[in-house]
Image (cartoon, rainbow, N blue to C red):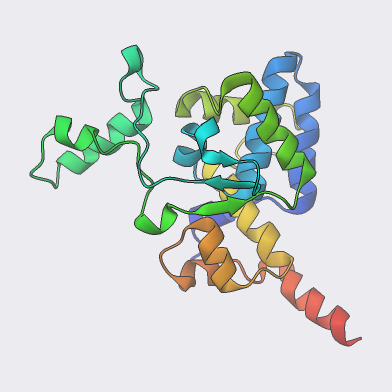
Length: 223
């Protein structure tokens, strides 16, 4: 079976920590905090880039410590409060196979990739992720920038990580890193599927023995 491109961009735990450490070398303190937040939210909660780009305060349930990704949230991140480039591109692609007009389809965005992607993602397990979310919530009311800015912020971190290549990971690769991280700690297929919003178990199964983590854990339990 060919390994998916995003799986190839999954960071090991050590490289994930190296990427986080690289954010402390960024001279702009505000930008460093933003980059650190996107790495933690993407690389530990596994939000898709489009989900992270549209993250807002209304999604964060602080009482239950969950991000609740809605089935629909009007996008106003573009010029003059219209669609952002990410949503506009998605609508344009959909118009090629739909009888609906661009304007009609625009009313449906932002929306998650699939119906299964509308979900609750817990963040109680990591104080670092909680602090990152608090920063984004307090400073910006969520993630304030475009998808292209998100990509540039991640590139900045990679450029400050001398032991990592410039293409070591990507926004989608951070999601794969999160899947690898949780599967390596024993999160089963059903829970992975629910947390990451996958339609089927086969996708979850691809992450169940990354770096031999499950094998190592099983051997530890019997020896």
